[in-house]
Length: 110
Image (cartoon, rainbow, N blue to C red; front, side):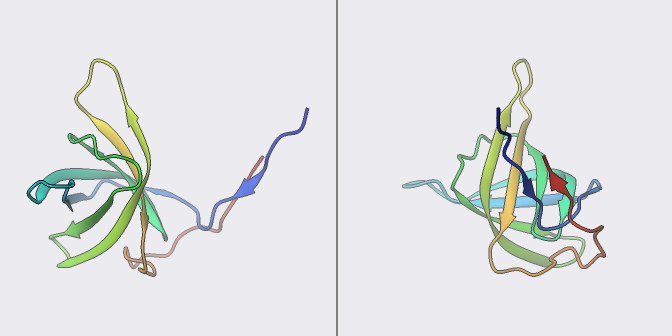
């Protein structure tokens, strides 16, 4: 049996940062959703929020403490039964190291 292997583009850092996700579903008003990061990478982040934003949607990640924002796409969504929390993995679009921190080297996942 063969297993697929791939490598991440950067390492991950566990860090909690309060952010706002701004997104607009089709034919609806703009939504602002408070969220908190749980993992950071040079190319995105994983957040916990309350809205079930669909995979493929574009959002703005707003970091009010730093006065910065970046566009991102939802690439993964996990909804746990019995909880209102939704875990989203976001990939930044056109932003190089939004977090402005040094990340560990990328790892290969086998």
